[in-house]
Image (cartoon, rainbow, N blue to C red; front, side, top):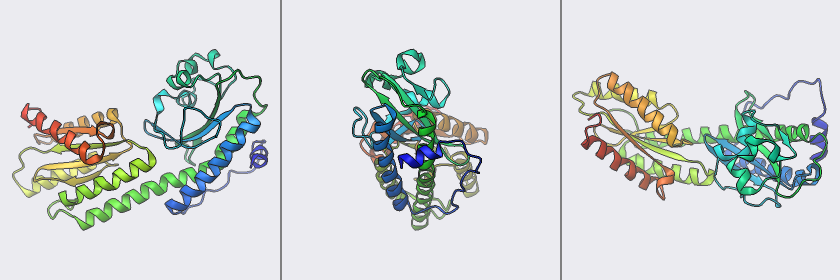
Length: 326
């Protein structure tokens, strides 16, 4: 694989390879991706001059290592990391070079929390992107000892490896999204509310359990958002409010919990996104005449999503009691 990557790093006039239209099954994609990623991070320390390498998947504000070289210290597969604290985020945003033989000479890198906690002395990293340019993850390496010299052509070599991994990572991301939608649709059909056609409260518990398993497997954050429409005097008015809630939360799975209360699961969302989405939802509903109240909680606040739901529920009741929109 090292030889293949080195050859693909050379300039070529050939067109980029076509990406397959079909999405492989999630389990097959995951296995293939992790096997290839392990081979890459095992090979790079031998040819790069950097002791530690990893492939990480970026999802919102979360960085999830999928493969980590044996030499790496302080980073584990499945360990959820803060994207904002990573040197890689600064690299992706153009705040430093792809290859930094001396991290101390690049202030934006030297000040990164993970550079400090890991004791980085040298760094190299490249983004892993989808066919449309969307950021999927990063492939990066670092040293914690004095670095004698980094390999010539390290940046194109890392880009070549990232290109080899990009199709599998993109397929995994697509498969995850498709599977989540299929499972949510199944739960909705099995537990549909007759008035709104959303999943009912009976399906809400199953939805939370399903998302608990997925988020634990992927190490991704989850937000539970609740909204109370206030007094609703007709089924037509309830349906109108339902439509507004669903349209305002396009990536969420929404369920009807009580006569006027809805719950939504926002996979991959953090506190900042939750606050923005809740504020935007409240603004839309109140502009249409609903005395709406919203509240939310994140997966970092409790041991499972059922407990997170109860935290959000308590906040919703407190907001209603204090007159915030009810």
